[in-house]
Length: 388
Image (cartoon, rainbow, N blue to C red; front, top):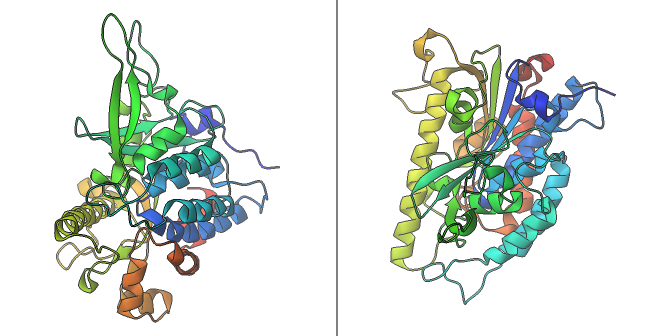
């Protein structure tokens, strides 16, 4: 049986190369992510001698996720296969995203967050962020709503706030329940209520402190690839990994990019709610494009695409030397792109329907589209025969 890195070795900056897997937010469109991940898992398993015990957490030293990507990241970090995650995902989608005339999204959250919590506890159990059962590095993006600050939560023991300081009243990040951290990352405004996490203990007349957290996609890191790169290489985060195209690879997987020419799907409530949601969605799309542009600018990327007519593929690398190898796999929900890249013909109406982030009936088609994209876009050569 092949020998794989344990958690300590995954985090050890001296053991290179390092590999990061970054997973976007996007509601139930995370099924598309899983379709692409199946092909990545297949390719990497072959490069590891077709070992049936191989898991993506054996190859990647850090798995980062935002929102729906956080659910997938947490499950993969515990050693689940992509098929196992998909099974849980189907159950979660059908349980959580049930329409109700009592919930319109304008006056109260559209869906019941208690059902999300129940589903996540069923998958992740009562583990905390410092659980020894997490087999590789894990990063979850969320945002503290009451302070407006984005939180990058990891299971790195050297990260700030992971352990309790002397006489500290704050609760260290490592003690946060894993399911609650993931639930916080998925608390998309309009769809779900915020998640309240106890972050400080009562002491000397002071009340216990709770933070209200919402979806990490409400920060610039709905695509967490750039934040993961920063976390791994900036001294302040405590990872201390080395940069360089031969030492660090970032693999980023999306949930499908909407076509701006076909409008927006699945929003039927009041005009005010419509404008609020569409404005937030547009901002998230802008941030996603900027993250992708910066990642291409900093890297050596065989999958780079033209971001726009001016930037094109965003080269040459900033400073002349790439900071990492970068792979980006995503589906552009555009008629012409699907025909050219995937060999599939879709009507604009069909693609518009797939844009919805909360439609369980889309899951089979999103899964099929993700698998197809994986077969068309993922190449064994991208992973350097297992060397990177």
